[in-house]
Image 1: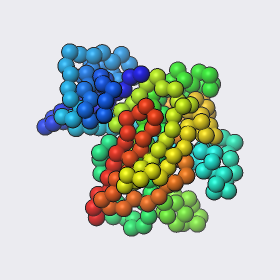
Image 2: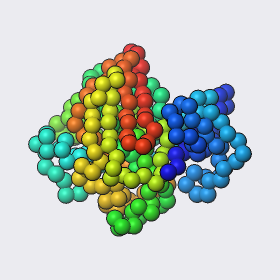
Image 3: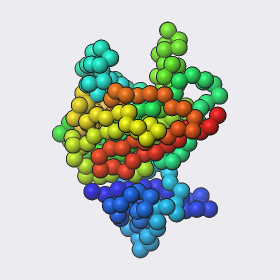
Image 4: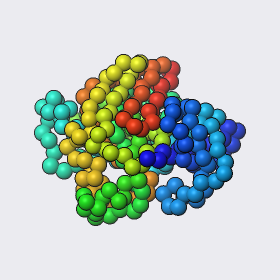
Amino acid sequence: MSKWIKFRRRDSQVEEFGKLLDEVDFENQRVVVCSGELFDGAEPTDEILQVADLTLLTPCWPSKMIGLWKNVRAAAEEQGLEIPDEPLYFFKSSNSYLPHLGQIRRPNSYADRIIYEGELGVVIGKACRGVSPEEAGDYIFGYTCVNDITASTLIGKDPTFKQWNRAKSMDTFGAFGPSICTDVDVEQLQVQTFYRGKLRQDYPIDNLVFSPRQIVSMLSQDMTLFPGDLIACGTGGGVGPIKPGHTVEICITGLDSLNNTMAAE
């Protein structure tokens, strides 16, 4: 298993990446600085830094972030929704990307309910088009934690047009990270979301309607997936509103946890 992060050193605008070295709390880990490209021939250098001394970035910068709807079976059944025959998805635009410890901000255009959604994120490692489920694993670089933040009441505000992309793509609404973890036994993963320190979501990845490999295969029939693209696999029950000053933590077995606080208004 390897874990990768992107970062800037304090007082620097240069973006760098590296591989984590330790199996301790994320903030206490060390990272070996790497050269080259994250998805194509990363090479370790002799330089080792402390994570606590760095400004963390999202661990990749997707050309697109795709989110699935109704992909956790128990949550769909609990809401009385039909299980889909193929992935139902929306997009989150790049302006929404938010790193670990970044602040969630309410947009001036929206004064209603903002909710958290803890999810597993799949990171693509090489260009992928028209692959089978059996081949799809070769195109998955690794996994990360996602908080698919949503302006929920906006989706159905206009009865003539569901505003999924607008509700999902506001600034800071696409939190993910802090690292990308490779070589994961994905079917054994459990997603837990803590809001103000209390457990709000708790569901296993084996309850997904479409597994990560199936998702990658089926989406690749529609479009080319590029290195760094991110797929959020859908959320379970227990989503709820985020209030100013309160913190949401997404924890997935074996992955580094994602922590974000909503800014005071």
